[in-house]
Structures are given as C-alpha cells and as structure tokens.
Length: 114
Length: 112
Image (cartoon, rainbow over all chains, first blue to last red):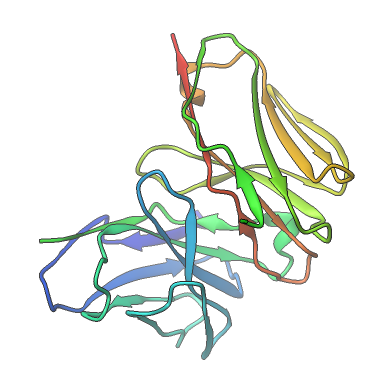
C-alpha cells in the first residue's frame, strides 16, 4: 500500500541532545513537508522540500534541520538549539498538483523532553 | 490577523445532530479549499476538497464555498460519535504545487 511512514511514534529527548525523526513515502510525491502541532493549536510549518537536494525554511525553522537526499525520504533533526521541542510532529507529502490530491500526512511522532 | 480563521471549539453536539463547521479567510486569491479530519494522536486525513465557489456532497458531508464572503463550511448530517475529531480547513492559490494554508482546527465532540 502506498503511504507515508513516520518513525518512531514516540520519542524522548534529553536536554542538549539532538534527535532525528524519520519520514518515508512511497507515493512518488515530489514535495514533502514537516509541521509542528502543539496541544489545541493548528499546524505550523517547519521546513518543506519540493525537489530532491533542495528545501526551504517554513515559519518556525529555528532549531531544526532537514535533508532531502532521496525523493522518498525527508528526515527532520531537532537540535539542542530548539528550546521547547515537546510537540507532535507531522510529516506530509504531495504531488505537484496539490489541489487535486491535497497533502497525505503520516501518523506523527510525539516528541517529549525528559 | 491570521490568513485563515477557524473557531477552535470544542463544539459539543448530540448524536444525530447536523453540524456546521466554518472558516473565514482574508486572501481572495485562494481557489482550492479542503477539509481535513484529525483523530486524536493521528495525522490529518483529507475529507473533502472543492474548487472555487459552490457545494460538494459526499455521503453525510457537504462542503460549501462562498468566495464573495470569503467563507467556507463543512456540514455533517446525522452526526455520529465516530465523527468526534478535530476538523482543519485548508486552502491554496492554484494547482501548481503551492503551499496549503491551514486554519487552526475545530474540535468536535458528538455525544451518544
């Protein structure tokens, strides 16, 4: 089945530690996105990529980094510079014709600082 | 002011009620409009999309767009407890890969 897979489902980070969230899709989508969702709040865009080896900062990129070495993969690293990383992280992908198909979202990773 | 406004709720209704969820937006250039449903601790899933003004129906769900008022609605008929979720509206400018702009979501609770 085609879809988008995020792992792990739950992740715990110690203070000062970098962690990487995985996002893989087999939908042959060109574009991929990372969003952060805090309790009771909407989606805030962290980074997005519309083509391999290229990505753009979203609204809240500080303290995060990404790479796009393969079309299928768009990992997100939460660095120690991100002072309040506890949140629900969502990865999404889309075909170039966004309007016809919308975004396909993964099931999310819940990151907690311990 | 946010580009897309959505009442966060929660909206609590009895089972069987008709539910109306709404979004207002400020950018008159938006052309494509979508509704996503997000269950707790899950990723959003696309529920409906419409282009420009008009209505679209799919089972118990009807999406309505009024571009003159910059207002979109999602109606749920015969609401069920399984409809309890957060509903996010989203919109974009054209179909050439532009970013979606999301509303903040409305939490709906349908009580048996």
